Image 1 (tube, rainbow, N blue to C red):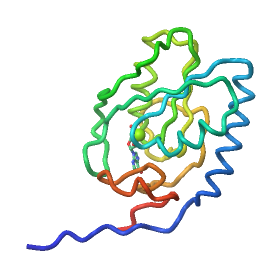
Image 2 (image 1 turned 180 degrees about the vertical axis):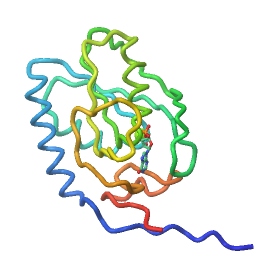
Image 3 (image 1 turned 180 degrees about the horizontal axis):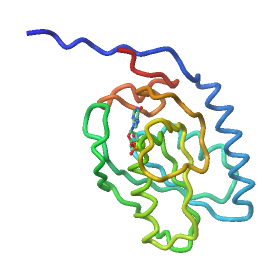
Image 4 (image 1 turned 120 degrees about the horizontal axis):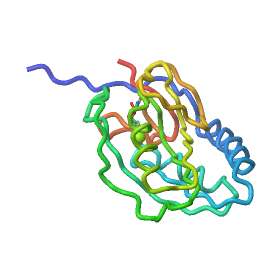
Length: 178
Ligand code: IMP
Ligand code: MG
């Protein structure tokens, strides 16, 4: 029986320093757009936790945080197109500005579902900030409002993003190189 070859990590696409710089730019934009407003930063688990930690420290506004988990992927690298909320929001979103903090928008299936799901709570607004955007694979009609970096059609790992739950801890953004 053949032993499964371990996948290899590609080159570094974005270093931690480059990510910090971009996070500061996004934070200034967000501060301007929500000036004088309250904001709930809603982190999508698990992939966005690293980006969330950076963003929540960088954004100088009256913010609160919450978490939601939705899954559309099984294990592996392709989407199932089916989304399920596995951990729900705990805060009351009524009349609140909600900024979804996402790791990557790929097909857009998850975000489109989440945006509609959150609209049912009658928030004041729902916008999306994503660390990465992979527009080549978009099938759902959803556009992120704030994008860290636009990436090519690669399977991205690191800085929160996983392949089969691994590589989330890499302190930079890379890709699977097979
Ligand atoms: P969607 O296809 O936009 O619904 O993507 C859903 C989720 O799949 C994202 O939030 C990620 O957690 C995961 N995902 C999509 N593309 C990648 C990738 O390149 N690397 C790791 N996870 C990914
Ligand atoms: Mg995700």
